Amino acid sequence: MKRIYISQTLKSTGGSAKVSGWVNSIRSHGKIIFIDIRDITGVLQMVISPSNKDIYEKAKQIRPEWVIEAAGKINERPKNMENPDIETGKVEMSVEELNVLSKAETLPFSIESEGYDISEEIRMKYRYLDLRRERLRRNMIMRQKVIQFIREFLIKEGFIEIETPILTKSTPEGARDFIVPSRLQPGSFYALPQSPQQYKQLLMVSGIEKYFQIARCFRDEDPRGDRQPEFTQLDLEMSFADEEEILKLVENLYINIIKDIFPQKKILQIPFPRISYSEAMKEYNSDKPDLRKNKNKDELAFAFIVDFPMFEWKKEENRWDAVHHPFTRPKTDNIDEIKKNPDKILAYQYDFVLNGFEIGGGSLRSYKPEVLEAVFEVMGHKKKDIHQKFGHMLTAFKYGVPPHGGIAPGIDRFMAILLNEPNIREVIAFSKTGDSRDLMMGAPDIVNDEQLKELKLKITKKKK
Figure 1 (cartoon, one colour):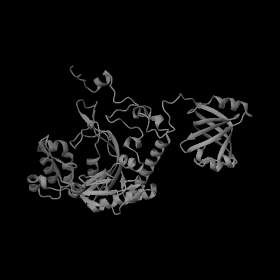
Figure 2: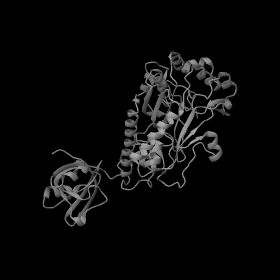
Figure 3: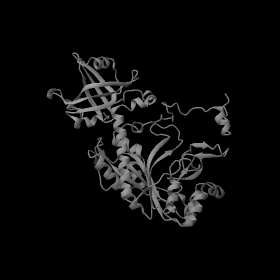
Figure 4: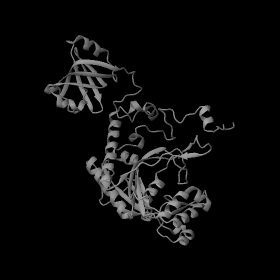
């Protein structure tokens, strides 16, 4: 007999079925043993009678979280014994076959509760057990539904999903890069992408016109409570699009995500408000204002913050830096004006905010080589350094580049807000600590001398 999911047993009433999963709980009422078995789709009550001695004796040995398989007849429960709290609460299995597939030691913590009261360190150390928790399993399923919806929506809008490289080049884009040594080119390094920014712009040069990707991004940042060194974003780029067209697309996408997947949520204002950066700072003293009226868990206040300054002064470094990133298009193509008055230049930059959190950012991009070069010069880069780091972009832009722009909303933060979770670690399957450690895998870790030798690397120990 072929195994079916527990949720499918409802269609098997009066017939026989075979199920497999984890032992959720065990109860004895008189001489009858009740075992609740759990799989990804739900929980099923199984009944073991002493009339079948072999199965009964086997059932008496079974403990919670053992992995078992069972076959038997699916019967309707007696009317006064139905369980309205579970989907299969009207049926039960009368067990005729029972096999233990795998035994389990006592778990280091309970998985029956929401888990918030348990030390996060121990939960992360045993994350594969923590993910058995119903809340986290639901979070993973809802995350997948949102990503699938995004894919289907954008494909219908004519976007092409394209994967970009994970091993790339280290360039100054804001945060620190994670670097990867090259064995075949000793002394040279790859970098993990902070975002697919340059690749997606090069895809616009290639004529793709509408690109998207559910992208993995990596930033070697200092410890921060609700950040992760690796995160996921929806990355998209469009050719021949203005700011309004991009924002309208995003607005339509997110309205439909809520309507389809989270109908219990209420969007406060449609269309989403557009607030200038200066107005946001003046009215709310924040560039990610929380516009909710009641601030209850099902109220969603989306907004776009627009017209950011192009540059900000880095006092500690004594230089100008791009507020967003250097590829953002200034609201002027006048090179002299960009160089002489960087403090007065606004940018085609927009942030996407929800309930007081930034959930995405984007911009129209500089597509004229001379404008891009001027921006880098304002940021303090010398011409030879600009060509060393970004020569590939400047060269590509000589061969006919369309005006283009895009946005990159984060998946993790968005899901945490929708699922009313306190932080993004609750919506990421295998998350890391605030200081970027993976407690489950024990990473980062040392590598052996042979690996270092192959890479032509040497570890310098700090002097005491």
